[in-house]
Every structure is written in structure tokens, then in C-alpha cells.
Image 1 (cartoon, rainbow, N blue to C red):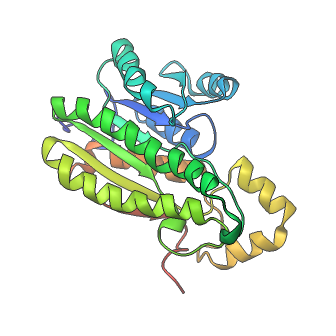
Image 2 (tube, one colour):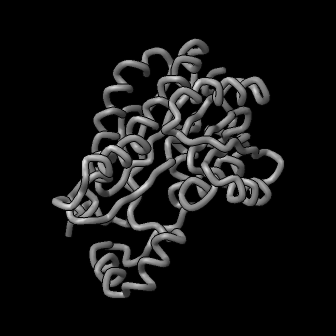
Length: 256
């Protein structure tokens, strides 16, 4: 497969695997992929959320219950998906977790718990997917980073460490794999409306005011904002883009 199309933004013929795709940003990415013509397989640990998401996404979507920290199952996951739907062309590393507390109160075990999901789990997914993509000379891998990759945010030391590491990993993998047809990029979302953020802001309106005060566009983003950016990066329109990170944050990372 080559990245040529009469519509360079189309994902028709592509197969996307989106970790953590049952809710929030992951679901927004899945929606955008399907809207652009791709088939998607979403993964997560809670089957009931995946079933509901696939029902909304329609016949071009399927799911697998999978934990990205179960590294010995990653290869068989991808094998089973390709056996059913054909070659995987796009991987989105979106699965995540979060622990908020003062850095001095973090335990080593909690730090490892966050790193295992965001960093090691994502790398495991990437290397198994990339091996197959490089054999075919085509594919793209996307990491969902964070504003915490770009500047300091208090009480999320483990998350910030993992998300900052994403950017170094993206650049390094791009130098190794892009010459063999696999593009690697990242998106750094700003404050996005999800169930988690909605609850946090309802319980702490002062925090929402502070967030909006740091965002030049004076609004929160939607999962679809990340979804459309991801779909662009997976499309032939982005065929010369690799090793970079695109902030999608209403301007929060530019400083003002």
C-alpha cells in the first residue's frame, strides 16, 4: 500500500488500532477515523464501554479487551486483528492512567504503574506493530502526549515523566523507522472535555476558570478536535510528516 489517493485526507482502506478507544479522546479519534473511511479496532479493559462505543461507531468498528501492560499478549492481539481484517496501517497509543498527588508523596510503585501504561505499554504496542508495518513498507504510529510534555503541571509527576518521554521516543523511533515506511508522530492535547474533566471542573469551578485563563481561545477542546488531527496525521496528506508533535490546545502552550 502507498499513500496515494484522489482525496489525500481519506483513510479509506486503512485499518486503525486505537488503545483506550472506548471513551474520551480515544473514542473521538475512532469517530474521526471511521468518518474518513477507515476500519477501526478499539481496545480497553472494560468490555461494557467497548461494546457501547462500537455500537455508536457502526459496522466499520470492532473491539478487543486488552491491557497494554500485558506485554506478552501484544503480538497475539495484533495477529488476531490482522487475521480478521488485514494489514494494520495505523496505531494510536492513547491508553492511559493518572495518579494525582504531591511528588514527595508518590511511591516508586505508583510511578512504575503510570510508566507501565503510558510508556512501556505504548512502546510494546509500537514495536510489535512496526515490525509488521516495516515488512510491508507502510504504516503510521501516533502517540497521544500532553501539555505536560511541554511545560510543568503540578501533582502529576509520573504522568508528566511518561508524556515527556513520549516526545523523545517519537523522535528516536522516527529516525529508525521512517526510512522503512513507518511514520511516527505525537499530539499534545490541551484541556479536553471528557467525563473525567467534566467531573473535575464541576467539583472545582476555580480550576476551570484558571484553565480558561491560560487558554487564549477561552474555551475547552472536544475529543473530536484531537480526532481530526489524528486522522490528518494518519492520512496521505501527512505523508511527509514524521517525528513531530502537534499541540491541539487552544493556544495554551504558546505563552501569553
